[in-house]
Amino acid sequence: MNEALRDRSRMINETAEGEELMKIGFIGLGIMGRPMAKNLVRAGHELYVNDHHQDAVDDLVSLGATAVEKAAEAAELVITMLPNSPQVKEVALGPGGIIEGTHEGLVHVDMSSIAPLVSREVHDALAAAGIAMLDAPVSGGEPKAIDGTMSVMVGGDKDVFDRVAPVLDAMAGDVTHVGAIGAGNIAKLANQTIVAVNIAACAEAFTLAQKAGVDPEAVYRAIRGGLAGSTVMDAKVPMMLARDFAPGFRINLHIKDLANALDTGHGVDAPLPLTSLVREMMSVLDGDGSAAEDHSSLVKVYEKLANIELRPGGSQD
Image 1 (spheres, helix red, strand yellow):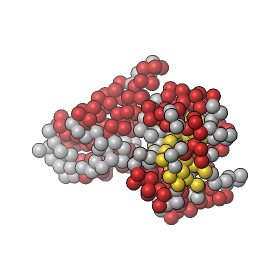
Image 2 (cartoon, one colour):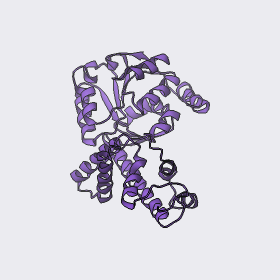
Image 3 (spheres, helix red, strand yellow):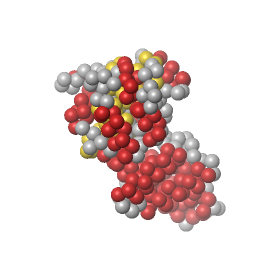
Image 4 (cartoon, helix red, strand yellow):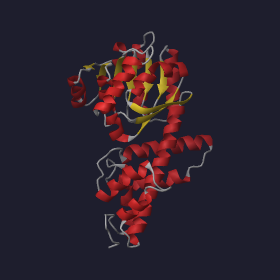
């Protein structure tokens, strides 16, 4: 986190009206969760962490966090950042889960990207035990998790949101209350659909440029400032051209998100033909052994079909 963003986080927590630093449990220290948790420590919050990967736990402990088995018992607020719906249900409602650590004022904020119906199911079960819950998935990938500029889409009771918003601000550049529980994950599914289709469109367009004998990097420079330009293009096309597929957001996680989008669409009779197509393209990459690569590797599908390798100054040969 750069110095300006660190100062911003401190300012949020020290000067916001009525704001107090909180005891926060954080479960899930993966690609996104670890830098998010670090930003909370740097903002001055008292952090209690739990994860299957000991190196991630040790990293946070070295910054001042405390390793615990049951985060809910020690915290006022428990944040989860987990791979998918089953893991969230297990951590929230399973043996030794958040529900067993219930105490007055406890709030669970799930920042995972999961099925909206599961968010509502977990919310209802926790509410019956006296625990408030928000669903608050994020967008921006690892770089924005590191520098604290992610976008957070939140569903749930507005009073609960207002209580924890300063904590979310310490990890994000933009935090928006979208609606009732589940609305955060609906917004995230919309986000993931747009991102996936945008990446595929970029891969398709720059494959066209190279096959037509034009330098795809020059085309990128020519169009990025116009209507076709986007945050996705600026983030992912340079990765395609550099053949840098180190994961900021993995193909297998995007497959999960698009599967949730399709399931949700089927449930509400919303047609998602483009989402379905890109989901199948990602399945090709999964089958080819690229599941752990960044979703910019969608370009490989087009390269295979067009019999080229996208590169700066590239020709169609």
